[in-house]
Image (cartoon, rainbow, N blue to C red; front, side, top):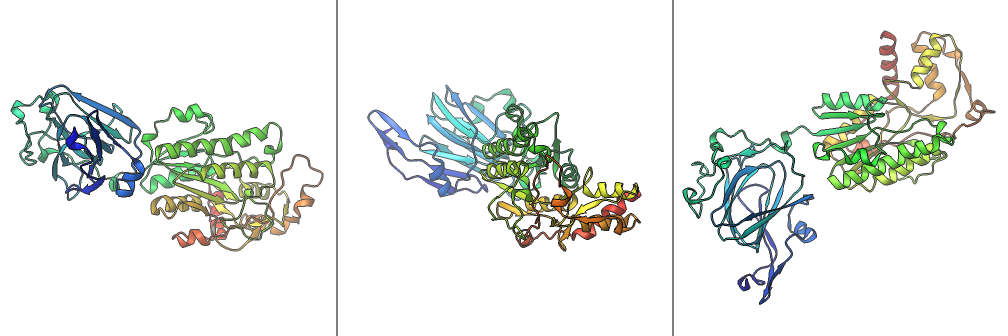
Length: 479
């Protein structure tokens, strides 16, 4: 091995196959043998190797010269190198697109490695006895994995095997692979539908997300209690995360007053902090995009408008638990923390309550000193889809409906009017007066207005809240 000793510097070169890279490794040797850094993430990424997050290491040992394996294209990326011996490597691009059928070959010894993108067919022929080549992959092997194959002796590929195939050692399975002209190309990543797991799928936002994601061409799978608990570490460990690209966390404990009780406090923290922390860890480990939905309750409401960079200052347990979850989510390398307010969708909410009161002839007292904007789940879902499809800078984005600032009292009056009832039936009252003498009431932020400048700058402008409110009530009245 002395001829390998320090004969070249670490380097990466491109090949005729797009994304396929040849890596020169520095091997240090002496009379005792040799040493090399076979995989060095920081140095190699700096030189241009994709940061592909390997999760499994495999070794193939071949006892005889002429063992030939392939040509197989797998649904994961591979970093291939030799531990001992020497192989002839041949690769055929089997991905759909203009490079389909492109061939590249090289010799791999301990001083050479290659990066093989998913969908590129690979084959190896041993040139020395007792050869072992090793490969890192960024997905766990699964018997359900879909491979694409081509015959080793395909005339179109015309690979110049050092050892003619009639003298090589080949399995019956590899002998049966099809000709290149009959191969169905491996689907390009850009054409594959993104796979999204929606937690809290039975909630107001969850239902809207499932519908909108499907309409937008995503593969959406929803989970919720009691079948799936995001705060259950074992439940998360049982998920095959390779089946997903994105996680949208719409699960939360939203019972603001109940969170102040001895029974509710740990439940709120479990759902709103522990669960997001576990999802953040999963997202980092499996290179997933995590979208987490938060609340303006992480602020004390003393500012007239809240920006994304305002430090959290929650007043009650609900807000405190949400702030804890937000901090954990920010540890995920790829995340969108979407902060919203006053959510209205399919299910129990303030607007539905006011409609019921109007219908029953009840004349409610409604607080007029809590101000903000409604957020309809249709707009919230569309905004989230805009983020995951356009991929602006990761981080925190405020997202509510647009329009004028209103109080709960203003909204209640408008709902009564839309229901054909006298809006003067609604009486204004301060928050302090409304909750006077009541026990177990969580403090509320008085100002819930979110600054939407950032989300607008990346191309999404929500509809005005009053337009959405009018449509929502009219549709509900006709149901």
